[in-house]
Amino acid sequence: MLKKSEELQDRSGNVIKLHNNEFYTAILDEDLGRIEDITKKYGSNFLIKVQDGAPGGVFWKGHAIHPLHLAASYRRVKSMHSLLSAGADPEIRDQLGRTTLHLVVTSWASILTTWRKPNSKVLTTVTGVHKQAEACLRLLCEHGVNVNAEVEDDRRQTALHLSTQHAALSAVHILASYGADVNAVDSSGMMPLHMAAGILHKDIMASLIKEGADINMGVKHSGNTPLHLAALALAVKTTKTLEDDENCISELVDHGAEANAANKAGRTPLHEACSMGNEELVDLLLRYGANINKLSTAGENCLFLFLNHRPNLRNSSLLVKLFGLTSPLTVYNQKGHLPLTLMLPCFSKERDQLLKLTQQPRRLQDICKSEVYLKHVQGKREELREILPERLYDFVFNCWENLHISFEADEQDSLSDSYDIAPI
Image (cartoon, rainbow, N blue to C red; front, side, top):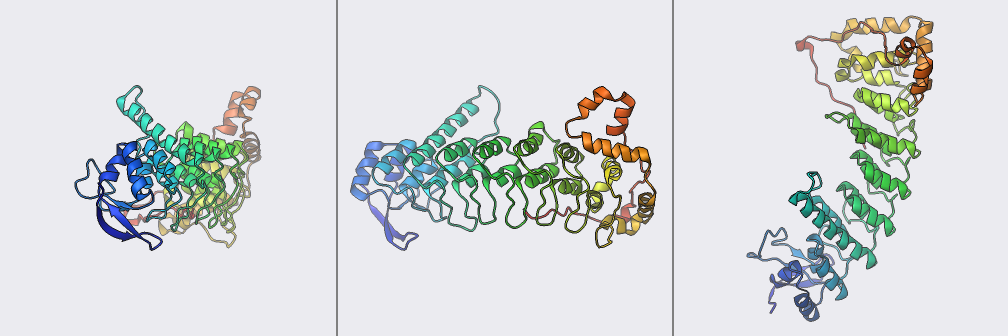
């Protein structure tokens, strides 16, 4: 028989009786008969406190928790069904402001999702745990819970935000099918699509877009669109860019993302790619129609942003490409300032060489090359390959004139530099 152990105030200030581990064990064992007996006697919305000596690894030990929250956190769907039938309130919140729905979704964080070895015991176990979590989520949705409820904390995220954060693709599908708002924003102004783009999760992005997510909405504080965030995430990756990651950019642009959308600093995704010195991403965005000559609010072109960060100077191939495609050719911003790196004393010689090159009239062949490249780089390269002589094709798309400028400084002149990434 349950014994009263102590009293504790809940979030609303009411005094709730707490009991020993008998209810805890019944919930985890899905002992429906015992759960029914206890709820008939004590109800289903009181708090229980797990005492020392509870079996198994108990992460709730010492904390007061509602029975339904306990069942949701351990993905015990039969116990949840029994408690809901007994009148448990799925909208009641824990001490962190989360409803039962939020707790089910956050349980995905503890599930291994990166194991890919086929026919393994680990994969079988993981699949089973996923199915349990999905069943719990469907049960709550069928029970009529508020699928758009926000966590009552500083971030104000919905279950769909949490599902995206935890890369729970099946949770995204289920929530969307029950009417979750794909365009809901948290306290920072981020939609789930912003989050999915920021972690380069193509499948979640595709699901949210299919459900009507606003593909060009900017984050409240920065104005960054999903394409900005995907580009930034790709640009800072230290590992080799995978095809799936590049497909995240394709997924957005193919469904209407503006390649030249500007954030509140007037910077486009291509500006960010150039600022980070990521040549693969620059090429990818150019293929999707990004304007290499668009200026930021501060009057900075792509070449200026590239030169503004010292680590980029090692990337000579991107430097010569930007130099060849930029028009009008200038390395100044609208205030007449040069990039920070060109102002360093150790690069005074290279600065003078670069400025001299910008002042020289461009050759007709270079102007034509730039025009043809920018016009036909958007998916028409293969057509030109069939038409143009091989040497001419290589000249337009693969050959960039060496500037014969080497940005090398003595070790004693080396200065640390950091990337100037706009806030999300």
